[in-house]
Length: 66
Image 1 (cartoon, rainbow, N blue to C red):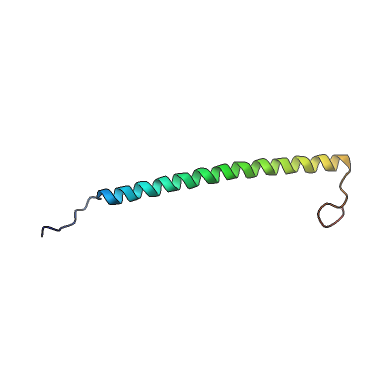
Image 2 (tube, rainbow, N blue to C red; image 1 turned 120 degrees about the vertical axis):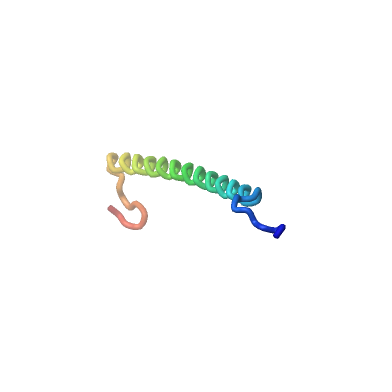
């Protein structure tokens, strides 16, 4: 009976939970940074598209001519 497990979490499970929370926080921050970068590149590409459309230079973009 000396080896009974207690109902409270031990140090190892607390450490594991802390590691999972830390890893989740790091992944969340990386995804947030990538999201901001994506929105920036999307806005930049749209501005370039508007500039080319306003200049009338819409000939043969990518594989088909407009």
